[in-house]
Image (cartoon, rainbow, N blue to C red; front, top):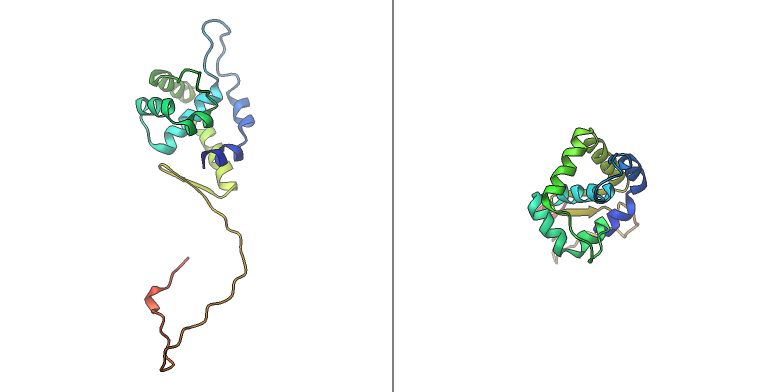
Length: 150
């Protein structure tokens, strides 16, 4: 499911928005901003604290693949995740970027609720109509309360 979502979202648009986030060319190299943003997306989708998210990324291969972090690379710690979220909030980027993600998901009929990703296929197919089942006396044997609604 995460792989499907990853392939649907236009990450280059988001990466472009994040490209000027780090202004300093000196000091230790930072984690790529797009990776850190993907971490915040996972946090929102799975309802994890910064500490729990750090642990989940360390042990979950799906999470690592989603954020493009190889097994040999070090997982960002919870303080790094917190600082990145604060930076996005300070720059007023977090909400617009999340809206952009939601727009991509809505366009592709994907519903994300806490811990679940549902891809909706609304393809209309033709099917034979079911006939009412008749008993020996000719009465309908189907339970009228056993129907369904859409």
